[in-house]
Image (cartoon, rainbow, N blue to C red; front, side, top):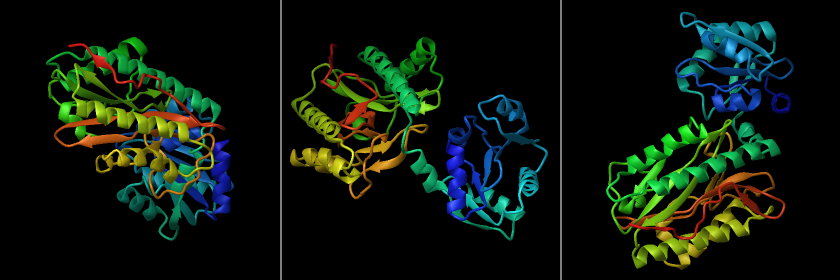
Length: 366
């Protein structure tokens, strides 16, 4: 169990208490997922005592009826949550001098408020790296959820392609995707805002969607994903509405070649840096290296961007069970942008994508 591993980490790292504040991490350890908004939601784990979940009063019964079978404590909006947390910690253990926090998540103000309850304690410990590494390797059940999220992304692409017409806006197409995901597939949450970029807008990788209208004979870039039972999909495709220019066809085919080469190159034992170089070298040798302006990929799981980063200079050894994206891009300002992306899992012999929408250049009729 993951909580057992967390407790073992506390013991081996010489920490007494772990304060888990990221709702996604809490869901990973407990099976209970909720969005606290401005209220306090935390998991308190101990090196030699049972953990507990701390939630707003309005979520206490929900938490008790969830997959979490441990103690649940709550607080009213009129109460001081930090005083209650301190009281519950001190009632559970006498060992609370050494704390490990999720330093990549906890706000400075919340750190100061909990520190004020334990002024003599040491808060130097950081559980963030342990959390990232334990989430790095996906179980067979997690992979099933990621595959299901991938199928939803494939469905979303088809909706988006069908919505392209002369004069419709990027926002209209994105809206059609999100609406049809809800009414046809019951998908209530995307893993991020659906991106649709037409023409030169696609040269800005994370712009949009805007009120820019689709015009004949230009490329349209899609970047989208869903949340399926708490697991994310993330995929990109670029299509042509009408006949693209020779330059657009060229950069599309270079990007497609680079992405496919990287997918075929994945093997346990290679480094993240080596994999990035497979795609980057192809794009660079074709003369477009300066237009590939981001890493090759990122981890995926309960969050759309997770550890690791598939990037030059990262000597992390790729191993079976890791899940990450492969998404080279070529972005030429004021001209066009192309990105082709799949997320997938590393197997004993290679890499299995979660999305399967064709990557041959799709030319939609005017």
